[in-house]
Length: 148
Image (cartoon, rainbow, N blue to C red; front, side, top):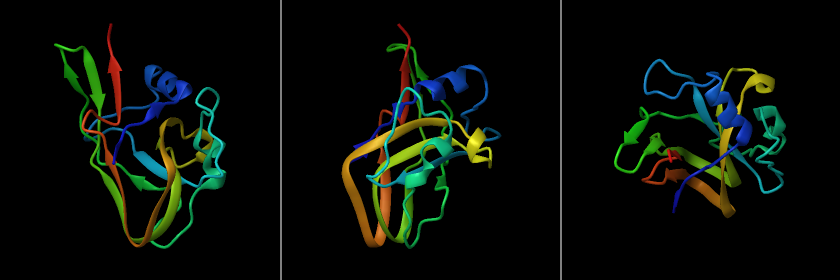
């Protein structure tokens, strides 16, 4: 199942203020962290990774803090006025993980100052058992912005 993320309102604000740079090289370190179904996310008030990280998954093959994304440069399609932010799919091999949510965030190496950008709700627990846990991003990108 391909997934795309929902923006955190304050994450979008951090982009607009120039706190986060999304580009293939020389940009920010953007990571994805996995959370259990015990997490309570608030798209309007969550701002930093320490607001949501209390319910981070623990399991074989998963390192606290999640995995860095290999970013693609933003792509703009003039005919549709859509700006797409994308990255390579991410996976944890030889893992035993149960996750309900994925949080995309800018890693400052300090949770209290690492802005959350967006999140994915898998709709149910996603499980790997001594296998590979993979997030396949939607072909339309992780995030998109439409100018209108």
